Length: 147
Image (cartoon, rainbow, N blue to C red; front, side, top):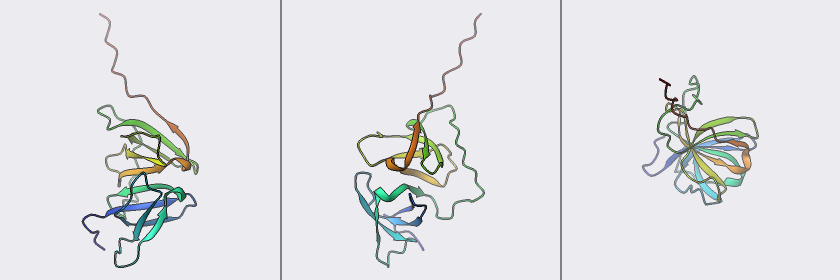
C-alpha cells in the first residue's frame, strides 16, 4: 500500500516485544501519544500508541528491510552528525549511532544509525527502555612522529 506524501513509515516496538508497522502523521518527541495507521492503511481508523509503552520508534526506509543485512555498529573517523552513543536496551539489544540533539527533558531521544546502509533513517529511543547509555570518544588524530 503506498504511503501518503506527508506520512512517515515507522515500526513501533513495544517493551513487551510487540511490533506494529505503519504510518504516522502526528509523532512528536514531546507528545505522550501518537496515531499509527497499521500497515499504512489510511482507509481504516488509526491506532493510538502510548509512547510510554514503547521501546523505540524506527523511522524506516521500507517495511521489508533486508533480513540478510548485518548492521555495521562501528564508528568511523570523520564528521559525526551528532554525539556518538551506544544504547543497550533492557532486553539486551544494542544500537549504535549519533544523537543530534539533547538526551534530557523528554521521554526519549533521536539516534541516527552509524550504518549508512541501515533500513532506519532515525530511531526515537524511549529512556525507560534503556539499561545503559555509553558515549564513545571521537577518534583522536594520530600523534605527530618525532624527528
